[in-house]
Image (cartoon, rainbow, N blue to C red; front, side, top):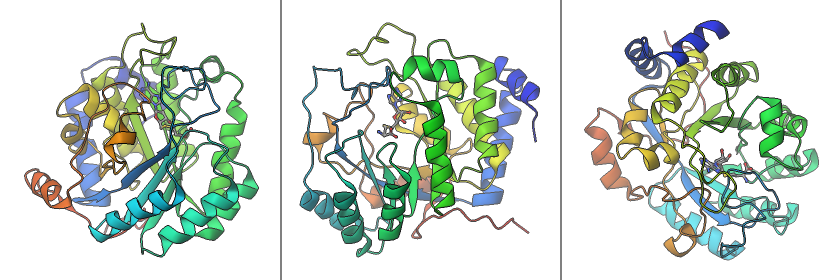
Amino acid sequence: MFSKSEITDILKTDERNEEIFFLADETRKKYVGDEIHLRGLIEFSNICKCSCKYCGLQATNKNIERYRISVEEVISIAKSASQTGYKTIVLQSGEDGFYTKEIICKIIEEIKKLDVAITLSIGERSYEELKAFKDSGADRYLIRIETTDKNLYKKLHPNMSFENRIECLKNLKKLGYEVGTGCLVGLPYQTIESLADDILFFKEIDADMVGIGPFIPHPNTCLKDEKQGSFLLALKVMALTRIMLKDINIPATTAMETINPNGRIIALQKGANVVMPNLTTSEYQKKYEIYPNKAKINKNLNKYSDKMHLIGRTISSGYGFRDKKKPQ
Ligand code: SAH
């Protein structure tokens, strides 16, 4: 286990990269094995009341065509995904109040009939709502802390509260969800020390899933001229997260693939064990532009399976819950 100063040192220089990447891959193999879990992502609404400064879906962005996918269509996308073998459906959206507690519960109940696990990624909701979603059958919830640097969090998230986000993560744990969090790497004014704190935070809250991706400037935001996050640094934060948290699920994020043409495979070989193919129909996918030029991934499971075999991995046919059992 690394201390904060060790993590900081590792992130600051490239001297120990090979060692860290090797150890991350070994830890992945030992604790979660060679199976890759596919999570089918449905981006059902790009309407958002928040104004996270890095995000292209921010309420203040007027150069974006907004959409909502109807309840029936969401269920029908999930149905065809489950027929082709997906065992997890991820429902993601902006923070869109149109989807009330009742509507989300209805979607969950219908999708649960398909014998799949459900992950929600719909932003901060009240304890009561989170409880209702869980009671309806939701299994997991993703809410990235984005950065644990409180001042930077405040700067980047006008009218939002760091404390609320933490509270939300705590509520999710209390309610028995598998909890996913994560951070952006390379945000303007982000320090290496704060990235070390992010990793320690994931450990402290005992996150079940951690998604890490580089910051990619979006042309319709005030951060458009800022520097893009480094692929290598994001990879190192991810590898250290694997080493520190061991048996959790870690996606090879789309943002990694977006800034490096082989990013997904590289991430899978340095700690990641999850991929999230996008199932949103292409007409909507274009409009769900959290950052530009989002990489696409083949959602055809057979083709994907062939590609994974080439790196010695197989596609899981299970739900892919975190298995806290320690290896023998
Ligand atoms: N509204 C949901 C889903 C947000 S989109 C929520 O608040 O949880 C999922 C993730 O995309 C965010 O958590 C953020 O980390 C990432 N993201 C947003 N803008 C980005 C950008 N410009 N570059 C890279 N990742 C970005």
